[in-house]
Amino acid sequence: MATMGFSPAASIGAKIGAPDHKVICLVGDGGLISVVGALATAVELNVPVLWVLFNNFCYSTIRSVGTTYFKSSYGTEFTRPDGTPYNPDFLLLAQSFGIESALVEEPSDIAGALKTALSKDVPYLLEVRTRGDVPMPRTGYWDIADFLKVGNE
Ligand SMILES: Cc1ncc(C[n+]2csc(CCOP(=O)(O)OP(=O)(O)O)c2C)c(N)n1
Ligand SMILES: [Mg+2]
Image (cartoon, rainbow, N blue to C red; front, side, top):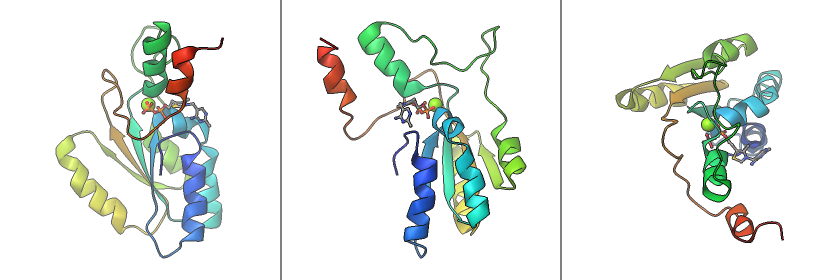
């Protein structure tokens, strides 16, 4: 599953289509906020998807596009007016939807947290804090890079 905006909702369809498979959705903090209603759908339909949320307090991918092509990172970092990092409390968010969740802050805790999350047969949000000061590693192909090379002209 990709990390882009609609993947939390798409993962629900994937699980419905393949009920015998474990479905894991990798999603960013910006992406999850954009489609947070997917969490309600999972509860309503009782679809046991595991969302692994990479929380880096920014639209890292969009920042990379901005700094690479436009020399600007405007609007891509989630902060309070005083510049401190800001995001909703994702564990409280999950709780408010009636969804189990856990938080990983140390790399050494990832394996155990994943094992626990994978053992659950309910909708589950595993928040993993990641670094916002470095670009999110990207794999695969995104045609926007080709487009931006030549611009709008
Ligand atoms: C539905 C949708 N809206 C907007 C975009 C454009 N977009 C691509 S990456 C991105 C930022 C994603 O931020 P986040 O989920 O925090 O992931 P990060 O880049 O920080 O890993 C956006 C808005 C998209 N791909 N899909
Ligand atoms: Mg992010």
